[in-house]
Image (cartoon, rainbow, N blue to C red; front, side, top):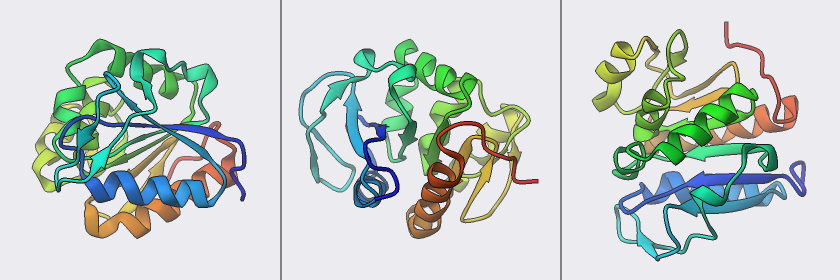
Length: 182
């Protein structure tokens, strides 16, 4: 229960990758974290593979000062969420405060639109490699790693590595500044 009482939000929308949402959620709950599922509204959504997800809160009700960390799963949801300024602003604020942001697969699209990728090592689905590079990121084809306060995961098959890096970042570094992966 190393994250007892820590509030962590996960950003979701219709078409989120079910496993990239549920597995980190359960892993963080296992460590005692209070994980909030945040969406643009409170309507039940369906993951890319059909699982139902009921949001706990709206994204516009979240404040970076109240959060210990933020998780951005992939699927089709990031492409929808990144069109909303409230999403990009929350990600920017979390990054500015050097709080841990876990980003997996297509979740990198939100990081790109929030303009926090430039100069960072990053990974995700091969489908966003060009987007990462064009945003000034350094593409790394590894399952999971940390670069500063950002924890990156590649794809569904890499969820165990992603969760390990994520929990290590949150426990070892207390949700604050994280050493770079260099």
